[in-house]
Image 1 (cartoon, rainbow, N blue to C red):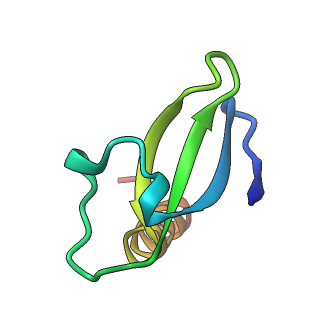
Image 2 (image 1 turned 30 degrees about the vertical axis):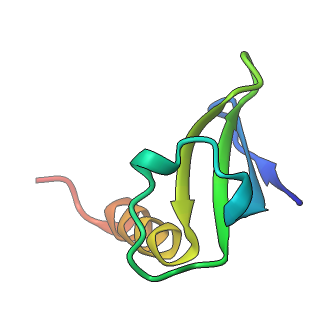
Length: 71
């Protein structure tokens, strides 16, 4: 399932855990059934994979960083 893209040249899709490309690098101790993949628009290759929980954590960190004042 394609989830849309970013101006940075990546799109995201959700796949079953059985379709993970880089399983040996997947950080997930939660037994998540689905994984979110970031795919490069240039190469068409999977560049990064996160389970749902880690993706939500990353989204939260990015949102907080966007709200933070510069020091």
